[in-house]
Structures are given as C-alpha cells and as structure tokens.
Length: 116
Image (cartoon, rainbow, N blue to C red):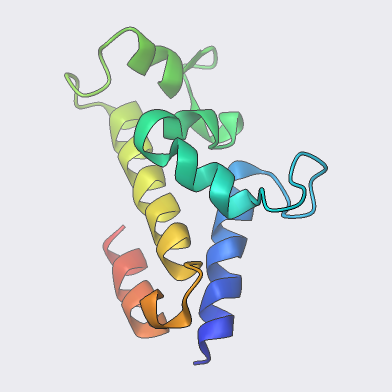
C-alpha cells in the first residue's frame, strides 16, 4: 500500500473523530487539521475529539469528568471510551506524519486497530 494512501487514511481518521474537515475555515495556510490534533494531543485531546463521541450519561462528557480529576481514577465505560479514542487519534497522527518514511505501514495500522 502506498504511503500516500496511509496518509489519507490517517487524515480520514482525524476527520471522522474530530468531526472537522481538513478544508474547515479554521484551518488556513500552514495550520492544518493534523497540526490542530497534534498540538492538543498531549494536553487536551478531549478538546478536539467530537463531543458527541465523548457523551456519557446523556449530559456529562468525558472531558467534564476529566476536569473534575476523576478520569484516570475510575475504570468505567467513559474512561475506556476515552482511552480508545486517544489510541485511534494517535493512529491517525502516526499515519499522517509529514515524512512518508515515518508513517505506519497499513498492515501495522490494521493490527493496531484490531487491538482497539
């Protein structure tokens, strides 16, 4: 599989799980969907993940839960969902690295997604 296909798949993952398109008006010039997710990844990944995916108990979101300091202390479906979404976003970022030689191979992507 061509590394360009892996790149496109990574961007597609980011697009689906952020509910933002790479052509969104907030991305212009050098600021891209990938850059937005990468910058938020370590500090505030829940800020870029589609809020609808983070809903739990109809009103409280996983990010609300995290803000209260409970996210990593409790093992519940919200925590598991958050961890799965982080792994998916990490895969999207890895697939869409700038240098083709740094991107995951598609076999590795499939293997990783199967573990999720």
